[in-house]
Length: 104
Image (tube, rainbow, N blue to C red; front, top):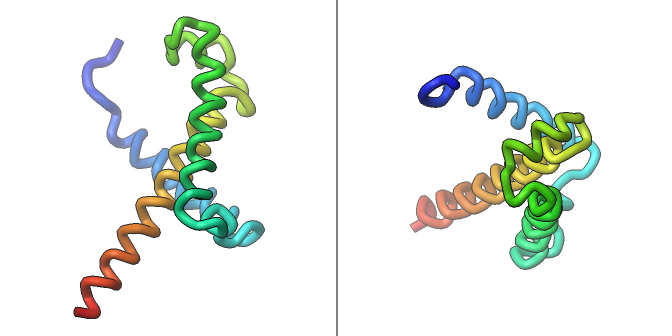
């Protein structure tokens, strides 16, 4: 096993997330936040629930769960979706915070 994290790969994943979010924006717009903060939280919770449901079968070993189902529609898809939704939430909050504080 390699020591440390592959930040070049992580950078690639993050850039792929941005590309995927830009594509999704064309079809879905800002539907992820259309029901406000509670709705956005529930969307995150549903993704987490899906991940949790899958890992419980393997004693919460996420690496084993991924190894057993590396398909593009399995747990990795849920992990990608959660990560992307988290980016949307952080981006939205950070942007609004900046706008609020720059108008003082």
